[in-house]
Amino acid sequence: MGTNGVRSPRRQRRGGRIWPAVAVMLVLAAVCTVAVRWGLSDLFWAEEVPAAAVDEPAPDETAKPETPTEETVTEEPVTEVPVDEPVAEEPSEPDASDSQAGQPAEDDGVWNLLLVNRWNPLPEGYTPELAEAPGGQLVDARILPALTELLDAATAAELGPIVVAGYRTQEKQQSIYDEKIASYIAEGYTQEEAVAQAEQWVAQPGTSEHQLGLAVDINGAVYAIYPWLQEHSYEYGFIYRYPADKVDLTGVANEEWHYRYVGKEAAKAIHEQGICLEEYLEGLAAAG
Image 1 (cartoon, rainbow, N blue to C red):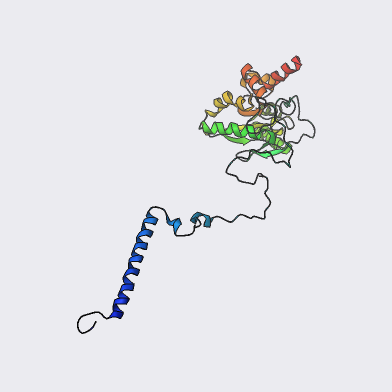
Image 2 (cartoon, one colour; image 1 turned 90 degrees about the vertical axis):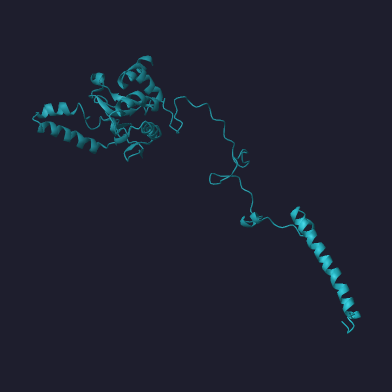
């Protein structure tokens, strides 16, 4: 500024350039603010990658697509049949007596209806394929699904079921048999009397259903489990094997805890008719 209070021409020209630039900057700032507010940022900035994409692994573009396997986890069910695998035939309608848990067919009348009692010993060389039941006892692997369902149902009824005896070897059955005889002798019975008494409760080695692997002894947390089993076990293919009124036919005294697998079809017939396995098989033989 000169001495007379008038701006010098240089300063006037500088000030004339600054103010228009400031004005332009203010206008641009206002436009940007409006653009951001109204979602028009694409007009001024390049398209950005969504943040979520950063966390996802990049697909392997060189990998060859594979058909889903049992180990493949997909969000949607696979509806197409892989072209490189044979198409399975449509399964036939399942038998009403089959278990939903994969229980094997039970109306073959061979393994599931094999009769073993004091008059019909175990077939020579009989050796079942065993599996561990809930609680640790071993049973024939073919009855495990049905047995598990039975125990689950009893558990749901708050009966606290537990399998206390399953498959027995010849040696185990012999040991139990000898111990029972010894207990009666200790009570004052003669040898002959002790054997007769013992065989009402313990089968001679080679004649026990436990050696089949198809029979189990089931106890519970409450006594109510025994009438419950008598009423419901047939629904799972098991029968109350030794009723009190069938001793002459079974050769064994009443055992509320002993249940034998025969399959749902046979179990239902035996339960509804109030008969024992010996009577059921006799009826089949007469009809066949």
